[in-house]
Image 1 (cartoon, rainbow, N blue to C red):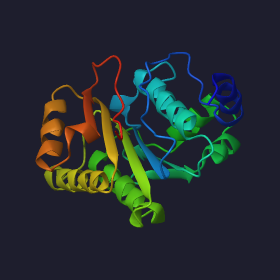
Image 2: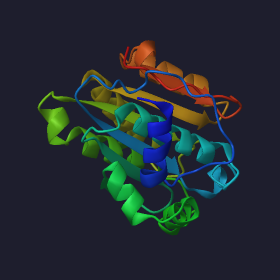
Image 3: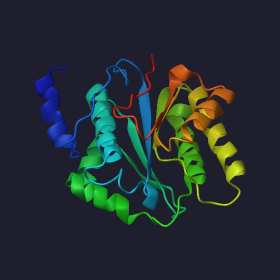
Image 4: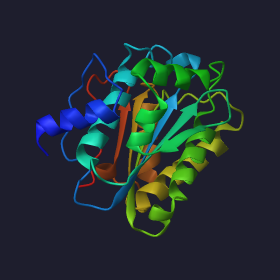
Length: 229
């Protein structure tokens, strides 16, 4: 695709412009394969608030992921699913196409304000939110029929404030591993430094290949997206 055409289409479809730009890896979403279901899970709890501010690193990364998605997948009938992690137990927020995202939100600020309005910042049901978002993704008919691919991006410090944390964490790990087994990839970003090696080990023990996953701490300046290669 020519760069000029991409800019024109993104101007029409994508309103999530960011002043801060991150390095973008190539070939994350391949244009010559079947449909994709892209799920982005955003931590909207108080502990993650600075990273999700308008000038925050996590918010810039959200823009990067969606821009990359649109660039590589222009002209395909893909789906975008948005979910949130906070004290609000309603994790699933929005599902649609790139065009519908543009139709529903008039600007980047409007989109971010809408996200924040759905959250209860006084807590973080991280694991239950991940389970709900991942199970919903896997229920998509395209994935159930083996005709599509899934990409799951979780932006969270992974600090869960709910009770029975270990049981919920095990369910979250299992859900992520199931998604990867359905020809999916997963990236977990801005993880608390102390929890990052724990989550890397959890996914390894669950059989998630390192080539299909990234777990990166909050101190990483330029996160990488996993590739379907």
